[in-house]
Amino acid sequence: MKKRFIILALSVCAAVLAAFAFAPASASVSASAKTEEPDAVKARFLNMLNRNFCYGADFEDADTLTQNSMLAILDRRENSDSQYLPQAAVIGFVSDMYGIEIAEITEDESVHKDGYVYINPRGYTAYRHEITEISENEDGSFTVYSSVTVSPHDNDEFVTEAETLIVPNGNSAFGYNIIYSELKCMADGI
Image (spheres, rainbow, N blue to C red):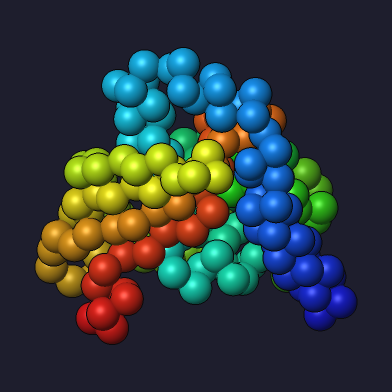
């Protein structure tokens, strides 16, 4: 299991590095992003931000990234057993949202069900973004600034800011990938 985790972690690192290395080379994707109406790009980014449950150090750990991604697709739970999500849906979402290819999701044998991933029972924080600014970077990526209403499962709601790096990806259902996202309250240690 530890070997699988190391392989998965290396895959995450390679995917992030590849996204940075190939972002400028994807001129056709960048060109299509430039031809898309600004309101359509903003709507796309807002959709991605509101489906994102990964911030800060979450991007450094493939297991955390995968577990948090499952929160975004809870509506795809197995009807006969709401404790599971189709493994293909989880792997597909992580690939589409973050550009990270996961070969296999490992879990405790006591909850294993072929073709599905067990949803670990836990409380979670909900995030609602309002985009305040979108800046296109020289390499064709975008830095998106947003105001975020954070609704923790065990505390009072509050508002903070987020900075998110998004890169074009023609292989993603979103047309883009989130490379990282940081909440100001996390960066400030709050």
